[in-house]
Length: 178
Image (cartoon, rainbow, N blue to C red; front, side):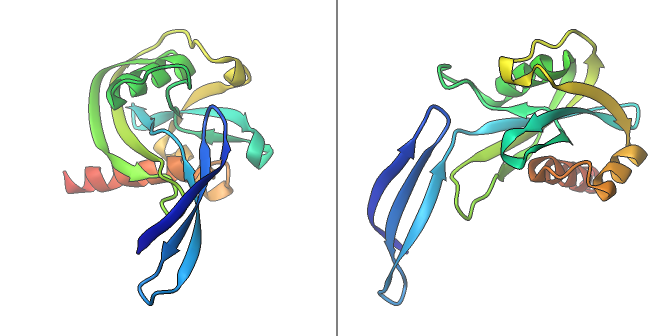
């Protein structure tokens, strides 16, 4: 597939949307809508046979939901490495700090229409602290759940965030591989 043309159709501080005309293998053309967003980090804070989750209202879905701590650098921040971002998000959202970090992998958020990817980190040897949440996260709560409760939450539909589910699946595969 070859890009024939590209034009920006929308931009704000968090994303850019562009429309690309592409030439397909048979010579015909098609259109792709592409969402460009910066990379983010997801943290699996694990201890005592369970994980720490956060719950917040997600405006596009119109509902509250449980998910792993995650986030990206603010639009006015020059960025940094993925581990620095993971540490920042864990502390901001839960108040936790981790003594041990392990990078589990890099995944794509929605690679059929977006350039955005994310790094998944396992955080262990946790120490409690006070969250320092952003203005949009003031209604956020966090709590520890056992693995058994985590499975029930997934099956009940309390956890519907695809990023959280992908990170937990990655953790399970890494654990199974040793």
